[in-house]
Amino acid sequence: MINIIDLTLFHTVKTKKSKQYIRYYIHMPSQINIRFHEGLNEFLQPVQRKTNFNFELKKARSIKDLIESIGVPHTEVDLIFVNGKSVDFNYRVQDGDRISVYPIIESLDISPLNHCQPAALGESRFVLDVHLGRLAAYLRMLGFNTLYRNDYDDPELANISADEHRILLTCDRKLLMRKQVNYGYYVRARQPQQQILEILARFDLYHKQKPFTLCMSCNGKTQPVKKQEIESRLLPKTQKYYDKFYQCESCGKIYWQGSHYLKMQEMINKIKVTAG
Figure 1 (spheres, rainbow, N blue to C red):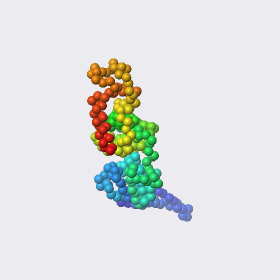
Figure 2 (cartoon, rainbow, N blue to C red):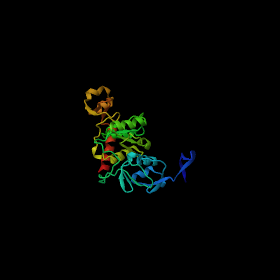
Figure 3 (cartoon, rainbow, N blue to C red):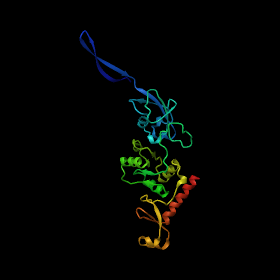
Figure 4 (tube, rainbow, N blue to C red):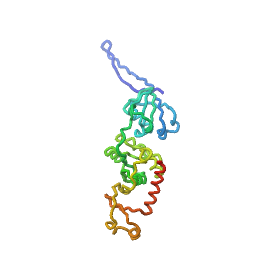
């Protein structure tokens, strides 16, 4: 298809008479060839997965903008090669470019290349969207600093992630495409117990757990508390059968090693088995 992309007027002067002409610029649409690798294929249409495909370049744009227009959040991309050369997100795409896009590959030593992702955070701290409440509780259970509220909106989540250098976990790819988000991850699993395993593996957290050090309700720190200090708040059976208690420094919630604790401990033991 041929598009007329510009129409201008210009003048020539001949024997003191001005003649007006219309100049047409005829433009053939630009095309690039692109391929996404490994887990990035999950964001593509079926026909685009695990293969090279052509993509029409309708306007001048950065490669980051191009990748997200195809459906892949920038937080999922770490390496980009254009015509065999490593580039970053600022590269301006040109007609005829052949592009390969890779996710984060932890196991390879690829430090000399242009990484699109920022340097890893010293501590993995999270903020989660409204659909991941159970995952938030599990992360807190394992001792990972995690912000969660069921009324966070998208701009607020993006700003918290940027301002506090927190990893934004979400099932909404559009949220990860917000420009201020530097640290983020699209959660693939839909079952909370599978989600926690996914996050532990993705961020290499299996051996960084500190179970029961954070409040599962508010993310505050928990500390041992003497029974007599909180006895008036306990139910009769709890007073009778339990003597060891913990309390959240922030919200005051009380914890003890009852049936809920045993279920959580069983889950933690299963995670340890998975970690090897």
